[in-house]
Length: 148
Image (cartoon, helix red, strand yellow):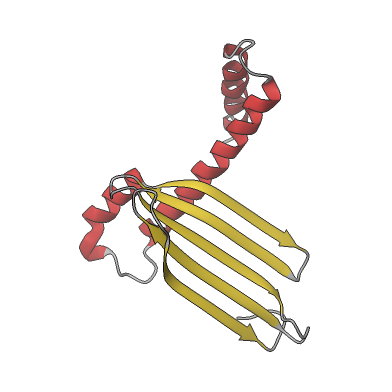
């Protein structure tokens, strides 16, 4: 792993230099950073599917392997402001399945009365870039500031 960082740095430097004057280096590096983050998010989904901690995927392992080859996280934003508020917005595309798009939203924030917190989670689905349909919406109101 110690040789990995210099190799990655050299590959990115060579890529930036290969672009010539078509793009300014900071724009290229910004796109590389964004794509690397999306690739990392996609890999985390694949790793989670491999882990199968609830042991629910053994009968559909072939389909899971196919899914892992086709899914792509196309956007992901994570925000955390101190201890009180955090949110995650992510979109996962499954192009092999009629451009199935899943939108995940998570938010944890203090309750309006300040005596606990509220957690909100939703999943929406759309096909071929059509209208989004709500699959799941969960709201949890917790008496403490940190729900379990």
